[in-house]
Image (cartoon, rainbow, N blue to C red; front, side, top):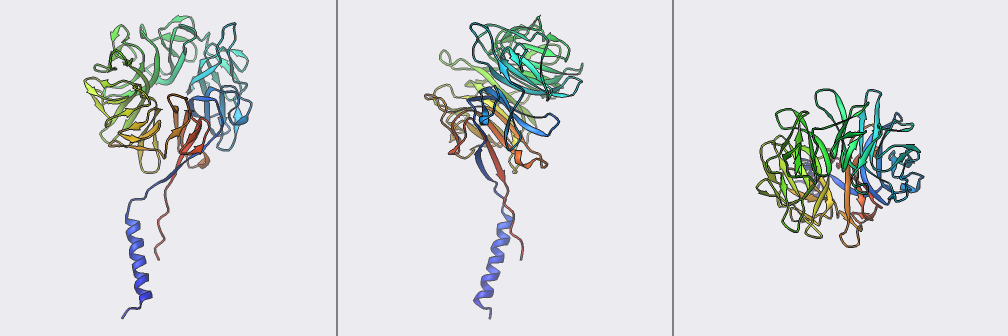
Length: 420
């Protein structure tokens, strides 16, 4: 007859084996990264001293350091990026950096920043500039915004149209480097050029996607035509001409004016697709609240989408991140729920359903609540202190943890019990 102690030991081993058979659940939490006024853009860049997070927006001293509108976080501390950006002139508005991208123009990878500013590191740089790790420099004569008080450059990405990689800039401008370029332009490292006749409204998001016919540049924003072709708020540039994505997106007239603020490519298991976020209620003829999926031929919704603090729930940022359980799409913006689940301005889509990231964000705008303007993912085993999903925007806490406008969502997988 077995003793009670032996029976208990066997039972514990059985329970341990059962636990090992269950799928591991990631343990995730938010942490504050630093202090900034408003964060509009995030990206990662290695200036030769190791990869780091670069944050940009409208702030004087993120983390308490002497940086103006752009700063560097190495996982431990903040440091300035030169002397940052300034705006000048009699009626100038405070400088803001709205977009960041990494591009190699043939002289080595560099960080590019764009937005509303007139100088970078004390050098004249009209709304867009390059940081090579040592100094800021202009991109020709930069942009001529229209009107000047509107965000002139708010999106950057890199695309190869067959003539070599180039930096593409979108925003609200009429010329780039003296060349007529309505709201979107190409920088090849030497000069600016237009993309056909451009768009008839602002461009707020850019990305590259292959719908099966070859990689192309996709633009979203506040336009209804691209290259003279009707294209409701989102369009495709194949290097030679513009084309629409079905019927594009639409709002709820007359109250809801649609726009597209975010674009990302994600494979949900059915193949890569373009995900589009912004302020809209339909995509093509499909009901889609603030976010939709384009597979190259047709639109589809992501559950019931987002609901907001007002009728204008919006998705402003999209990125792909793997928290240890597989790659998922993450959305940030200004919304209360995602798929009917309380999410507070940031949520995860795994291809089937939405889920929150802890308690999401709090604080932010006194009437409309928190905003997430930017998301960036980092995953490199050689720099574990940086690993995680970063959110930047306008909020005072993330998951109940103090986080002044920049926060990190990090996950760890529990170690399985050691068999006895």
